[in-house]
Amino acid sequence: MLTFPLAFFSAGWLSAIWPPAVMLGGLIFLHELGHFIVAKRMGMPVEVFSLGFGTRLVGFKWRETDVRLSLLPLGGYVKLAGFNPEEPAAEDPHGFLQQPVWKRQIFYSGGIIANLLVAFMLLWVIGVNGARVVKASAKAGSPMLVDQVLKGQPAEAAGLRPGDELKRIGTVAFPAGTWEQAVAFIQSHPDQAVPFEVIREGKTLDLTVTPRNEGGVGKVGLAPVPAELQVERRPFQVGDLWTGAAFSATRMVDLTKNVFGFLGQILTFKAHAADVAGPIGIMKISAQAAKIGWETFLSMMALISLELAIFNLLPIPMLDGGHMAVLAYERFRRKDLTLEFKEKLFTGGFLLIAGLMAFVLFLDVMKLRK
Image 1 (cartoon, rainbow, N blue to C red):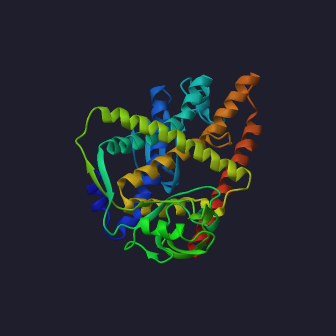
Image 2 (image 1 turned 90 degrees about the horizontal axis):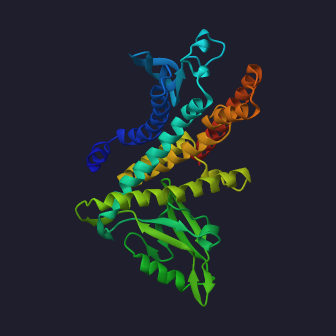
Image 3 (image 1 turned 90 degrees about the vertical axis):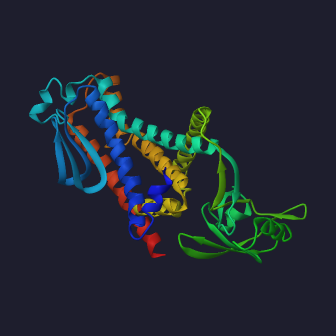
């Protein structure tokens, strides 16, 4: 059922536009929808539900809520009645500031929960589909992609990355050659420089890998995967739902560990600039993932959704986690922070986030120039 829309949208310029629109726009919309649903369920009046910031482009009125699409699509917001203490609506008994702390905490967590649920559901779909596989083999002439690069091994030292398309290893050219032939070539050249030709983001790179000598056998610490598989599946069974749920939960844990591990690398200045992707980078990645197949696209979308949840959970002012941290601190000290201090705190958070966005956009642009 998911093959048709991908095939339909794969022609022409539309194939470069719809993947990032669905991935970024869809995930942001679902994040804000989480806030909106929580607010409605708890009886909080919502004045504005906007996808994007800035000038209102189009929209409609739903009860008391102005549902709109705004000029700048990279973001969104839900505006509640009584949210601003300087407005007359701040004294509204149903307004946001008059709600108990636990309700306000749940409101801020609504978007995070939505992103976590979206990631789980997308991975669940992939897991259910994978449970039906009875046989998988590489299609004839399928490109070979780097799937895993082991830490501390020659392949990592040479600069190979997951997602690279292998075109040549020594004298073995792909897709005419086989991975078995490449392994034999690598094993027969321990401690000798082996040329690798790969394609990364549409550009051909020439790398040199020197296989580690392990008992006279060369090893590089690299695992590939065919880009195209011939898959046979059995009919759906009810048990596949449980298998898919288990796969999703396990995958969520693994991805969460990877995200926090990468955040640790950023904080310790061990991350590479090439590994950081902003909106432009995500647009490119989403378009590439859609070309590979719907499972790859949904898997990437689940990862981005999980990253959005974790990022918004961070205790940075202006983010959901920042608001939750301020509420928790005020509850702990049993006294609200002054309005002036909060304005300075959240202004600082806004400047920090704006600076980070500008930095990752700069990195994206620099990558495009290479």
